[in-house]
Image 1 (cartoon, rainbow, N blue to C red):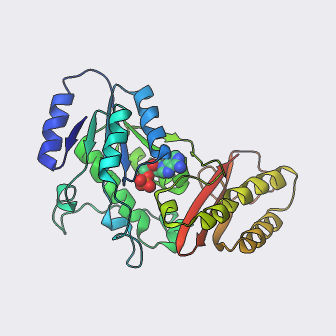
Image 2: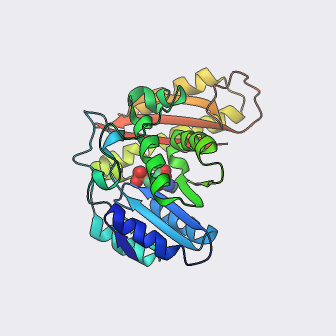
Length: 280
Ligand code: AMP
């Protein structure tokens, strides 16, 4: 695997790679790779002949009170895992200047109304930061395919919306959520939790599963959400939001809505915010 640490190294690497036939797939990450991330790389290997992973902890998507400084960094282990998956290129910029132009020249992307809803309500500016960095990676790398996880459901919808207008030829794929045995969606932030907290955290998925069962049993959505809230509280999870939306994240008003739907939830345990969802 070739590791590029600067814009110039990335440019040279991509130039060499362009001599090889086939599609180039991009998998953007913030590192501390787990099986969720690796599933995206496996999917990329199936769908393309050249793969590039990025590891960059993007300051623009962290709020002032968030964990930017303490976000887990495990570069050596990450490299080992990527080598094992036979990823072709890793772009792991040494600093933000190897990604962004100087302040004032950054092309900021506005995530719109949807970017200020759900997770965006709790994390103002987060999705503008995500779209700005993803757009920059698309500009720098010019992939044929880009892969994101369904774990960050709202994120992948917003990226698809952005790419539809700015990169109409780019193919965006969404990979399913990878979970631990307890059902907890894998996340780098799970590292902040104790063993006891990890057990409690798996209640988030249980509440989503129960909500799908209840919905299919024609129970009123408001009641389902109240029950989920009560259940999460009993497990010491602080409830952030719990909502039913359609697959494009529009509000579902009709209780007989037959299209694809998603229950999305966010809850906090000992200052660590967890998100999860089930599409059905
Ligand atoms: P992150 O490093 O958290 O920014 O995640 C990088 C990519 O991996 C994003 O597209 C995430 O949605 C995806 N991802 C993170 N956790 C999981 C998971 N448990 N299952 C599938 N994809 C995931």
